[in-house]
Structure formats: C-alpha cells, structure tokens
Image (cartoon, rainbow, N blue to C red; front, side, top):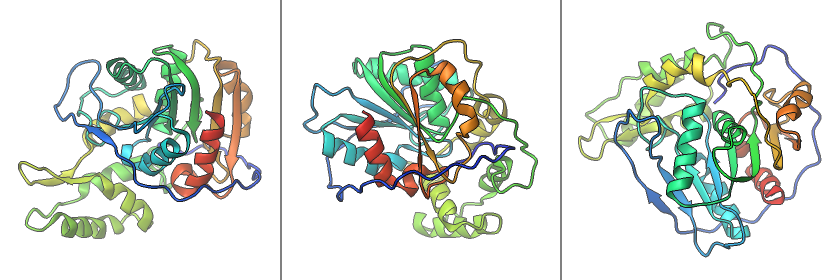
Length: 315
C-alpha cells in the first residue's frame, strides 16, 4: 500500500507493451509456519518455498511484499516464475505481517536482518532479491549493507530517496486514515468468517470507497484456529507505531551495491520519479529503470504478466 504520497508529481512516458505469458499451472509448495510473539532482534519468518525440480544452476529468489500485504500477494507470480524457469522462489511474510511473528520493534535494518537470517537458516547461499514498496526498501538495505551474497536485485515501485509526506492530510493515500479504518473495524464473533468479512467490508466502505482496495485489506483477516476468534492477522498496532519514524523513512545511505539492479515502476505511479534516477545510481550504479504502462503502485497485481516477463528476463 502507498505509505507516503510524493509532493511533486512526475510524468513518466509509457514503454512498449510487453508479451504475455501462458496460464500458470498448480505447483506444490512447502509452507513453514511460525506464530510466536518475538522480542529478539531478528525473527523467524513465515515463507512459501516453490522448489519442485528446481535447477541448481539458478540462484534462489527471495520475494518481499509491501506494507499491509503478505506473501500471498506474490503467489501467482512466484509459481509462474518457478514453472517457466525452474528457479527456486521463496515468498516471505515480513515481521508483523501475514503469519510471521508480531514484534514491538519494526524497522528496515530489522527487516533486512530477518531476511539474512532466513537465507542463512535455509542455507540458500547466493540469492537474488525482489521487493515491492516497503519490501523493496528492505531488500535494498540488505543489499547496501551486504547482509548476504546477492546476485541480482529487483525493486518494485519504490525509491530509496526520502520525500516529505503529511500524515494528517485528507489525501486518499493518507496512511493514518487506513490505520484508523482498520482499527475501527468491529468483528462479529457470532458469525462465520465469510460473513464477518462481509460485515467488515461494509464497515470499511463508509471510509474507503475502492472495493478492490478493501478486498486487498481484508485479506489480512483471519480466524484463530484454536480460539476461533476473528480479527486481523497483521500486528496493526505495531506497524502503526513504527510507520512514521521507521517505515516511511529510509535510513541514510553510506554504501553502494554494484550488482545488477532493476527498478520496476508503474507508469501511473510517482514513487520512482525520473528526477530520482541520477541520485539512485550513486548508490546503485548499475540501476536500470523500466515503467509498466497502465500500472500504478501495485504493479505486480495490476500487470502481473508484464512483471513476470521483466523479472524472468532480468534474472
């Protein structure tokens, strides 16, 4: 989700339309579940491992979602990349998201360290990284800080350069608005999870008009398998507390990452303005920039076939 809105709009020209890929087929996936609340500096992350007859000659790909998202946002793309290339693909839930542990602390250094811990525990060796939005900043920091051996880096619709934002504005992408909307939902514990989701959608609709966005946010609902309590899967309080100081702001850059790097932006998004390119290349000297026509911030969900093609060609 958008976690700040740039104050200056930049027009980006559309690039040539891209070739479509064939329909994906079902693949087996290994899911590893972690659920404990953790106070350690790093946490064991929940992930899905697409590793059916993978080619050892190809480096594994770690994929990181954006804020208020989950690894499920990348399931179809991960399956298709694995199916068409034979590359092992691991999609990850960030701390406080999906099924990964809830923590009081949340920052890019911690999220990057979580990824490094996962790569080490899985004995992945050299990896390539893909990250969208918040996840894009986490993988950029992991690369800049050399936390693991990285072959290639792909960043989806986010810049490492900080911009001013106003969390009190009435802009439709005001994140304070979303946090308060989610916190205000009253879950009916006397009905099924499907009915509770419909009722939650009705509540959100009073303040969020976009039905697609509401459906995406409602993917974070869950029913506890033990207590049967219905609520949010994400740690909304923890994310909210960390947002302004630790998520909306990328740490100061003091190093460079010289391996191949691809920035994929939405042509209708302003998160990687052309004016950022020169400064981005000071930290990522091999950076390439591609903008997908007809896509906004959620490039991978709006134009999945184009993103799959760009990633497979780059990797």
